[in-house]
Length: 129
Image (cartoon, rainbow, N blue to C red; front, top):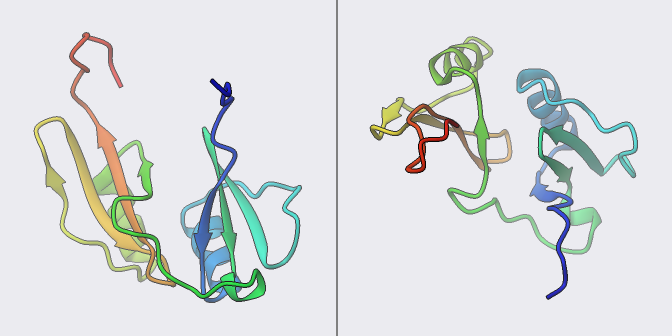
């Protein structure tokens, strides 16, 4: 056993770092980590994990968007988050409700799929999300 402490970061490849800064920092409102290492690798804190928004071409590999389902962001109210992003000109898919949670999909300016998500049903053990 290696005793993993936590997920340090999730790498989010982007084509344009300035567009990504606007999307992740301004539109999503994620706090910038003041210790981001460089202009082509900008870290945003999303509660329990760091999103490392970076340009692959400056790190020796080609851009490929994240696969669907990789990044789900918990929001307080999916409908409200959807409305705010749409008001800012971001296309967001129709909301869905699974009977346990609600969600709506969108994409960042580089095409990475992002799920706006909120579980509302208690877990099987009775604890609340």
